[in-house]
Length: 153
Image (cartoon, rainbow, N blue to C red):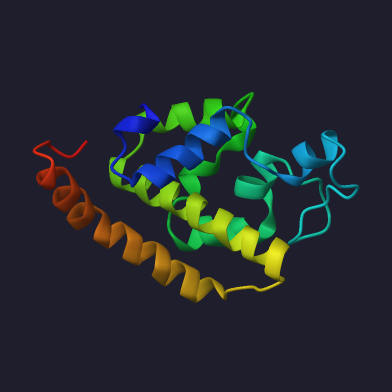
């Protein structure tokens, strides 16, 4: 499955492109560039914040993967990289992949809210937000692509 073919908004695709090209500004990358000293996860404070930890391994995000019934998308230990994990999603249900991609993107926004404003949204509200994005995606895609005379991906 190519990221560009999943029925999600362009900003979610861009987020996954940054994830697969190792340009997502996780704390480990920022620490490696000597811009911060502490690379610890802002949620659990137990591990270094790498892309895989931030989006798959942290206990905070694991709860969301389970609640959204997308835990099958998080079999991180079976792969050498997070990008390989994402490529493996091609064999899974397209709606689950769509929901998982939106979940990861929403959680990254939540992570940024925690890092920059020290705010936290309860899981039930995040789950409602994810469900809303999933429900609106079909309407959004058909509206945008119809305006320019194309078929949605």
